[in-house]
Image 1 (spheres, one colour):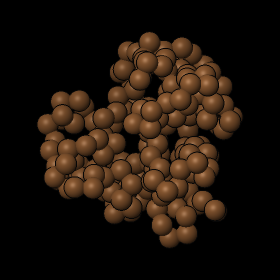
Image 2 (cartoon, rainbow, N blue to C red):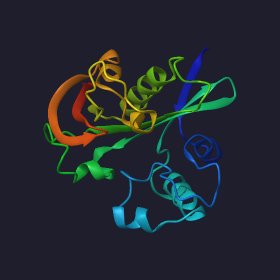
Image 3 (cartoon, one colour):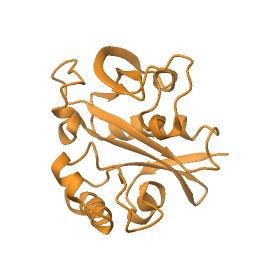
Length: 191
């Protein structure tokens, strides 16, 4: 399978990967770390999709990267300047320095395409995208699970091993814990 990763510029493709199956559902839609918590919690059903559309068209464009297998969209990774995310003020994730780094924090791979290298392609594509946008470095905040299995619902942040495989190095411990696993700050310099 040849995976092509591109900036997320097509709303319908973004919605296919991270949108709910039922439009009235109030699931994440990858807004949790991107907009203020109060706003994210207040948005219901189609309002969430509309908020993502506004992010893409009016505010940030693009808001991440998408993985394609031919013409089929099969994966998503959220990547943006840290300053435009909750990680800019999230006390549990420390700052390493004052560089205007980018954050890579959410992955989603469609069922049927898992365990085929899509996550690796997404992280590589996010690195390329951030570099093309002038980012000096890119950070991720995965779980440090060792050899323990991570529940799929909590694997959206990635694993330390995934980031190490992509050339990231541990830059700091965090006080954040997800699904019982500590999260670490992984960083890759881009210049």
